[in-house]
Length: 138
Image (cartoon, rainbow, N blue to C red; front, side, top):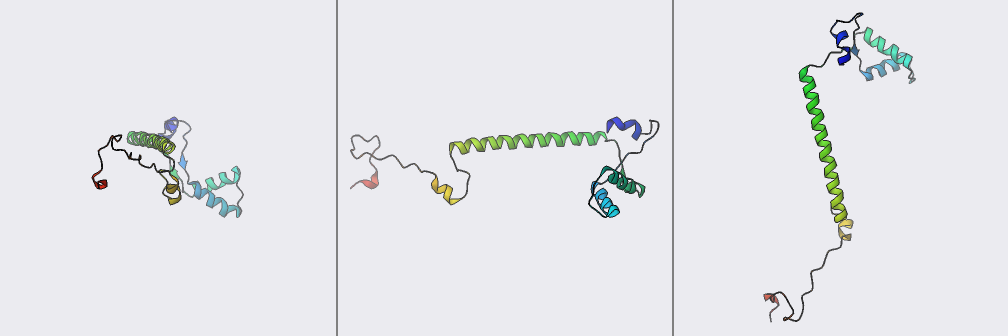
């Protein structure tokens, strides 16, 4: 839009009037005018001209400093969100490689994950590194 600043502010000669037109309105006008679903540049141009002649376009304007600042902030937020999504996906992928099926909530996948059994307790107390369990004492 900056390149059209001279025209939009009226400093250029000849002066052009820039208007935006809703693309859905163009489609409806094209369908209503031609009564078919054919789409060509000639038909679209006629529909756009018809909408502008009826005053259904809205004038183009240069973005203000506030508009540009908001655009920059929104772009920055979207980039940060994208980076967070990317890193989150990498973490989930790595974790899924370490523990397959850990994030799946279905019972069949959870049941297929092997559960490590506890280390067997030696029967000979002299070889055991642990003290005897009080509930096993007889």
